[in-house]
Length: 535
Image (cartoon, rainbow, N blue to C red; front, side, top):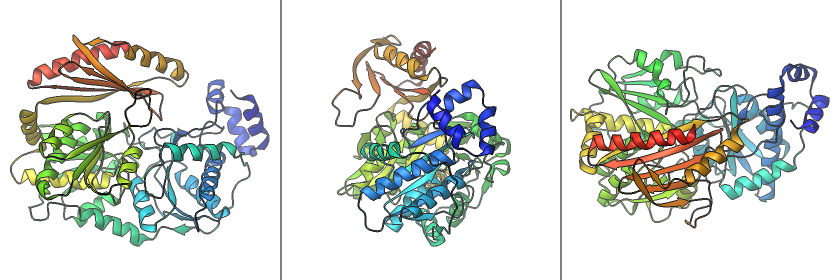
């Protein structure tokens, strides 16, 4: 524990907060006063509480002032930003603190009147031609977390250089323990929100077919609870069954077993009420990622992020008549699976891979000149189709997925039927992400130990490692990142990276074979060996 920080806080906070700090046990105090907050892959995410290592009205004020100083250093004439927030505890408060700090620094801030999905902040930055923006969210982290995402004038999350400059300014700011008095706010014009909805609807490629598909939808008590149902209604999809237990905001997410669409537990309540829905779509609380279950016989089958990506690429290539598109391009990440790449190659679509994190994709999209964006996606269930947004967008993805499923339903096919067709044509891809969690206390030493063990692998599942890329030291043309990717002779690759926002390691496995059972067997053997390393 940082004793100096602890003493400073104990002297300056109000009586009510002193009572809270006095109730903390040694472990909590150690974690809450360990170090100042730093930007990760997607900004800052941390637990709520009191202390310099967690999020509260004092640390948020410090972060906001650092961001304000960064903007002032850019010497922008009449700088403006956009501020949004999700349904989490303290989100609205943190957004208002940010708006007030900006006002105190002569920076105009447009704040949302209600919760909004993350991608709308990106959209509004471009509509206002603002200097940047802030989204208060912790995405799919547990309910005792919140976070702070910052966007640049291009509507993209800050790139590495920008994030470092903001962090430098935050480090120079001293905590201010007095509470703010909020003045009148400038709110985002509702006309812009409505324009966003209409612009998403225009992306639909399925205006002529019957729209009889049945969908069960859940926003998991998050920020998409209004926007997505409204967009689907505007697109004339009327058979949408919204999960009642999860249809309204709840900062504690009491009716959710998981907030992450990558985990099957996130679908529990949707499955209870799905009945005979063709699809189940679950969107994470800040509205930028979605997961999909497809009705097949009497069960529902989950699509991985890579499988949905491959399906969407094939669908778009056909519906858009890809040969008529000028220099079509798809962006994904270095840990996105190969399935989508193979499908894109069939249609002559260029694929460019960036580092992990949609901020790198957003940075590429912002500089697009001679190419036409077809899609951008990551294996972690994030998709984007139109550069009116520079971040992953579950509203766009929900509409496009339903469009695609409805298109195939009119041909008496499910998305699983189409997936099988693609597998029979291109091979069977078993591509999954495995997450290994560690406690905060273990994090630093254990994660480095596991990374080292992974680096030493020369053979796995009975197959040789033919070569590897260490993105932290090898010259790849990309910024340096702590990712190691090993290519397995004849069958695929494995990659490892520590999470930028949580004490966990992610291992990505991409295996391909013409025979489904052999592909699955190889995957299982490799997964077993990885599990042993991560024990």
